[in-house]
Image (tube, rainbow, N blue to C red; front, side, top):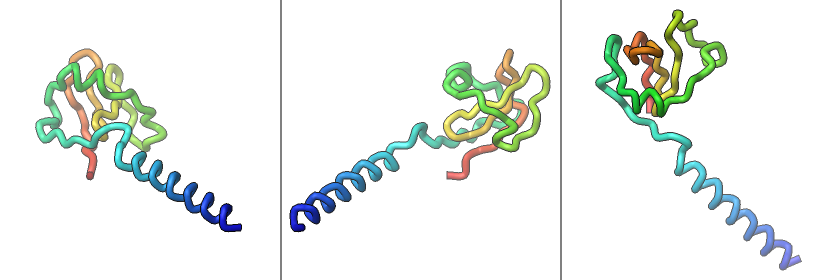
Length: 94
């Protein structure tokens, strides 16, 4: 019985350590970009770093022709694909 309790305690400690490290390292950093505003021209590195997102699943408005929503550093950005000019931005709140 003592061995089972020791093994169970060790498993709990191992799992809590793994969960803690997973929470401490998010998939992407949350970065505020105060310069990103309507009409601002996004840098290509920022645009390319972002992932195209499904606007319907995130309850965002439909992008106009030639625009798409991207998630960049935890922010939702609607910008022109050809130029990178921002039409709309939903900044992260972290």
